[in-house]
Length: 223
Length: 190
Image 1: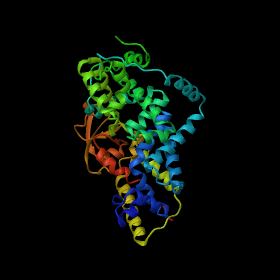
Image 2 (image 1 turned 90 degrees about the horizontal axis):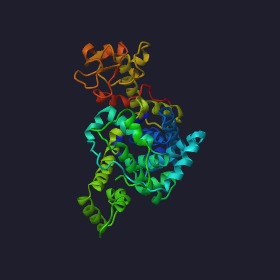
Image 3 (image 1 turned 180 degrees about the horizontal axis):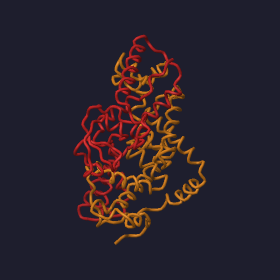
Image 4 (image 1 turned 45 degrees about the horizontal axis):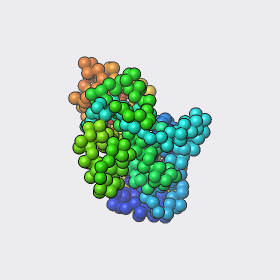
């Protein structure tokens, strides 16, 4: 890979991001590989959160990285490079999604949901899922399935904030929404995921019991 | 300050993010000490944030990084390179080509059992591994992700590749992580 060429002259790990960006701008294009390496997975995750399709997400991730390379002179350093990159990815993914009529219908339905209050369920059933269980593929798969059940607007916020660890402000900027909206959607996303995962490892995470958990009731007390 | 359950639910996210005033924080903590339901909500939501925030949840398709780099390679304009850079590029190309000749990865093997067989070029060819007739992957002995454990055959990684097996992304992860950084295409000429 071309990036290795430069790393022998001066280890790229020792270069800070600002320096890397400047040197890429100055024509050392090979250093772009080093610049994006820490964010490659995040770019894919952001695209997948919106598109929910591996092939489309990978294609959009590639497009986004290429676009970042072509427009790196427009990056002014007002935000973190990672935020700028994710912002490009979100825009690319949304453009791809808009091509689908079905997804337009979905987004309308989700907007109607946004103002409703959300009441947690399954207080008694909650059992903690230890993080060690993430070694197991089926656990990660279950978590991914639960995430896929969230409405688009909640999933976007949750992925950027809780999986990519962007700040509230960075998430808002990436999605073009207010920080208040980020907080509202994040709260609902977290509570919905908690409800979806409430039976935990000791519960029934298979068959109808799992899918029956996907219909949320709003505004009703569970006891 | 005394708060009710609905106020706790409304603030649980901000509470976990450390974005509530000290007075409200104390009130929430006081409330959940005496309310099992709200304790379940707060602890469960914290668990959700911890689980999804784990690096292991950011999975990408196998070979994603390599394909991304290839796409970049194809679109990368000519760049400045120093003489030292060119020397290093040549050395890297020799290493990459050499390793591929030794390994003969399954991407060039028409009998590949899995598309993933094209990856994993960092696995040492003489590494002792096991593979099952029922599976598509080869593993280190003892790997918990082996399918068909009763029909295992010992072999080297080189032999496994020749038979079309792909490396297990779990037990051979450390080798694959190395391979991800070494895409098979030689550096672009400019």
